Length: 113
Image (cartoon, rainbow, N blue to C red; front, side, top):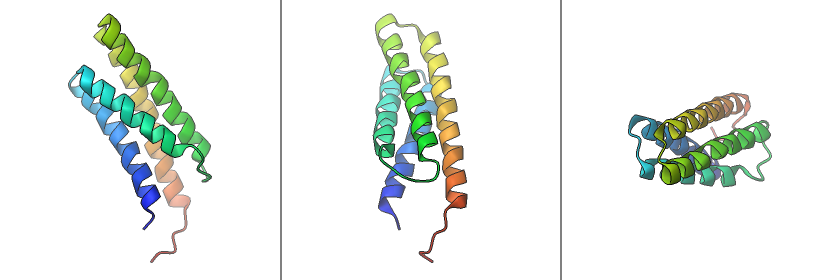
């Protein structure tokens, strides 16, 4: 079992689900958690040399560039509509990231069996 890969996929799924949690219940704490978890997921992707790692890193950076401004916009200006729209963009980037992980997993040959 590859514990690094487990940790990587865990934080990727946590980023997706925490962003969905904010969209379900617009709360500043949930948005901060989504941004923080996505940032951790981005740092875990730096330096990996897999088949589609550049696409994974790019999608995670896109989600960061949506969630961090969404948090600042919601916290400073209190405009939920813009924060909500940016969170939807981050959700799209996270869904793209999960699809890339599925494709990479299908192409990977595992010999642990």
